[in-house]
Image 1 (cartoon, one colour):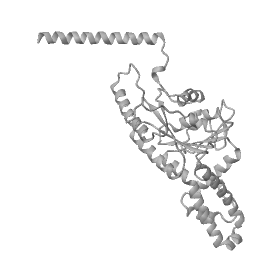
Image 2: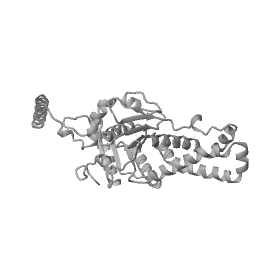
Image 3: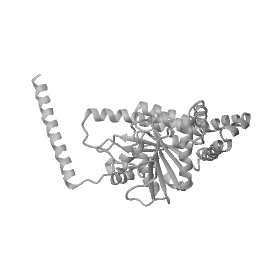
Length: 350
């Protein structure tokens, strides 16, 4: 089994070095810190790229909380940056996103409802079309929990199937559609969406252009969810080679809590399994902090842990810290000597 000492620590430097990357997806189980990690990745990318857009597709939308700034479905410049933009979109379809041709609303609605997921897929296609016209260097997706993310990654396939079905209907009922609804108007926008989604689909499957960063914590359910995600990404032919293990407890001197030590042992068991399962991945361990990471300065402060392995023993200690440690050790030694003396006296009496 792999151990911490035997396996070189990974960082996200490989993502920053890959200049060809256009799309970076960040995902994992709920509550593992996806928004914090995707926000920091976008900040780091903004240092090496001309322009970065981070998009939240999670209906819960925590991006505004992370940066402590209100975001909407319109890209907004993040405070303190000149080239980092953020937007929050709901992947559920809105009426404004659908083709609007007089007399065909009910027909199109019925047709869309007959294709599972087509409404969400079309909304996603609209967002991608909008994003592509803005010409950002790289786009980071802060995705919803795993199940929703997998559905989002299926949208290109869903939309292509839906378009095929609509084109089939077009060929069979061409005259009727043209007479009743204005065939060209109805299908023109759909054809445009299809072109966008086909192009994006090709890009998503190109490891030079797209990668998926898995966020997890060192617990069983998160390990299970990560493995499920990695397997599904392989089916979609989407590249993934970075795992960020968040909320790791590091063993520091002076920690005496039995609960903490038990928790560390439990975490280490799953960390070892991550290294064993994903020995060809870049695995980055991020420490559990005593406070939330909110606001640009806090995000920037935490970002150095993404670029160099965290080692609690290297933290600088003041003279006062060392004096306290010496005092504690002297006190513990004195207590141990007292207990030993009591034991010796008891033994002599016996």
